[in-house]
Length: 114
Length: 113
Image (cartoon, rainbow over all chains, first blue to last red; front, side, top):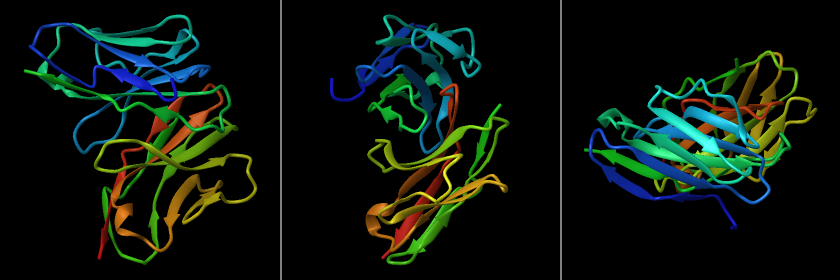
């Protein structure tokens, strides 16, 4: 596609349920990033991928969070046993190999845990 | 580890005036890049400007310029002739050679008519 696509755009889930968020990056982009943003706050780094591997998983808040990327393309972020504090906008971004190119962001998934 | 610090949670500026948004960074990597993004209330992230660590000149893009002071590890964004549409959150970010991209906490800019 022309841009980074995230789905769903909105997700309301009950506490304790698992959710899966999807990110479809720009074709050919090797780097893919996941961030979390609470209302009016900054971007909290979660994880990033270089191809299919994740050099840095240190940002994942707990072992309930996991992410994978297959085929160097689509990535899924899974949150198990969701808690109310997981409510936030989850942003995905992708960029090319070259450091001097900007990251392109998706529109985000707004997750609400009730 | 790399870190980005934006010390101004919120700022006001009068329309048509210039404003400087502060950003300092910390990294041990010799090669890195610095970005500024704008996030209006709609939530989208808009790329504004890029500065490479080896660039000799400060980056400029229209009304945006980046005041890069490498020795002080600062990369302040200067917006000239502020417009009402400039009201938004502004994020400074740094990328290293391994493509790790880290953001600061952001500055909310409000332009007064």
